[in-house]
Length: 250
Image (tube, rainbow, N blue to C red):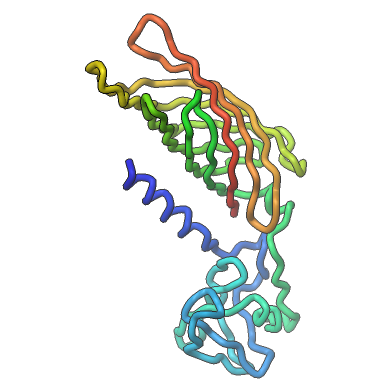
C-alpha cells in the first residue's frame, strides 16, 4: 500500500507540467526572440544554470508549461526552460507581442483533467485520499479515488474506479457538486485479542460537496460521502466521511 501512495504522489508531481492549450497560452506555439537574447535554463527555475542563449531573431517552439516556466526548443534542437517574463517579450508569427497569462476562472469551468489530495474523517478514522478525474462535459466527470483510513483498531483501504460527479453550476465561484459511486473497501483489523481476518467488501456511496477556484490552476474542495458496505453478514454497514483538500486542474 505504501508503494501505491508513493506512485500516486509521483504521478501528481509529474502532472504539474501541463501541455500548451489554446485556453491559456498563445495560439501560435512558435515565437521569435525580440530582445537581444533569452536565457535557456536546464530546469524550471532561476536556480538552474543557463546553458544556452537564444539571440534576437531566432525562432523557438513552446512545448509545455510548468508554473511560470516554459519548456522550449530552438531551431537546431536545443531544449531548455525559459521564464514567462522573458517569453512575454517575444513575438508571435503575426508580429504581435506574445500574451502570456495565468489560468483563471474561465479555464476552471472548461477544465478537462483534475487531480488532488484531501484529508478528513472516515467514521472516526483519519483518512487521506488521492484522486484523479476527467470531465466529459462541464457538468459531468468521473474520478478514480484511492484512500487510506487508519485508527487504533483497524485500517481501511478504499478504492473507487467509478465515481460520477454532477456539477450543476460549474460557472459559480463556489460550485456545488453531487457524487454517486461504487468500489471496494479492504478492512485490516489490528486487534490481537482475538483471531480476526482481513476482508474485502464492495460498497456504494453518495455524497455532495463544493469546489472553489483559488488561483491559477488550484482549487479548494470540501465534500461529504455516505458509504453503504455490502458485507457477507446479515446486515450492511454505513459509514460517513468528511474530507477537505486541494486540487489542480488543466
